Amino acid sequence: MSTDTALDRLAARLGCAWPHLYAAARDSELERQRLTEAAAAAVPPDASMVVFGSLARGELTAGSDLDWTLLIDGPAARDHIHAVRQLSVALTDAGVRPPGPSGVFGNLTFSHPILHQIGGQDDSNRNTTQRILLLLESQALGQDAAYERVLRLVVERYVEDDRGLRYSKAGSELLPRVLLNDISRYWRTLTIDFVSKQSERDDGWSLRNIKLRLSRKLIFVSGLLICFAAELYGEREALRCGDKVDPDRIVTFLLRQLRGRPLDRLAEACLRPDVRPETARALFDSYDAFLAALSDEERRGALKRHSFDDPRDSLGSRVFTELSRIAHRFQDEGVHRLFFEDDEQLRRLITRHGVF
Image (tube, rainbow, N blue to C red; front, side, top):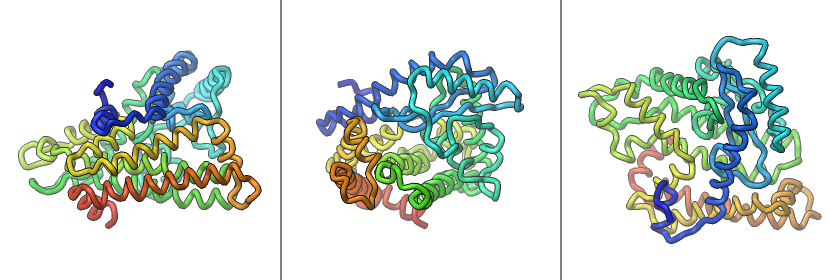
């Protein structure tokens, strides 16, 4: 087995295979290559086609849809809407499942609100979602100049606005608290919006519930680990120039952290010496089983059709019960132990900065 990634190293240490994690990663890479070719002609010079969700995370399964946007970094132009239509046609011709009905994806996204409306009344759920997912689970397909520019500008904005970070004293903890608070706010928004969707539409409730407790929670965990990374991996002093914080170094460091897959960030944390093998196995065995279920057309279909209030759907109930057990293990034996029991430094960071 190769040892190119944190996930590879963790699998080698534990003697685990996790076939569905690796199959999803391979399928994701092939699909990104295919869609890059299919969509290339439709993307204008001032834009990037950006994908989110399972494809961007390297977790593609047979039933995955495609969350995408055309990210514009420049003045509005009449041709932009035509580019979106061309992209939609190209992706439909390529056999891609369209995004969900939320309206967040499958359209235009302009850089101005993502960059300049962080917090405040104009920072809508849609804007927050696009910004946080741009940071935590996105990739540009094809030309990436607009994407890379916007990503750097957003990170620079978080660092610039974080006076506690920029003026922290030598020897003190180095955490991007503004970014951490925005990631935490996004997670809490997801959980309460789930309840709103529950009352608005019953279809797909069970699938959304399981995704919230596994793939959505993974994104939150990954975001926390990014914010804790300077402390966890001994980078605090490297990000200073003398007794002052170097904002450019912090931006570069955060961008480097953002490049990795969420599963690799989690694996890197599980490679820390105090994290028990049982904790790592609970996390990654659970996630492998989750992807296995989503890859199975019959089980995924049953879960998607299952209504929480319909006892007649025996297959959907069995699949939901099985995946609920998996989600509980991921949380109780994995996430909780990782942050609150195994690793003293993680426990201190999550208690001090993630709870209060």
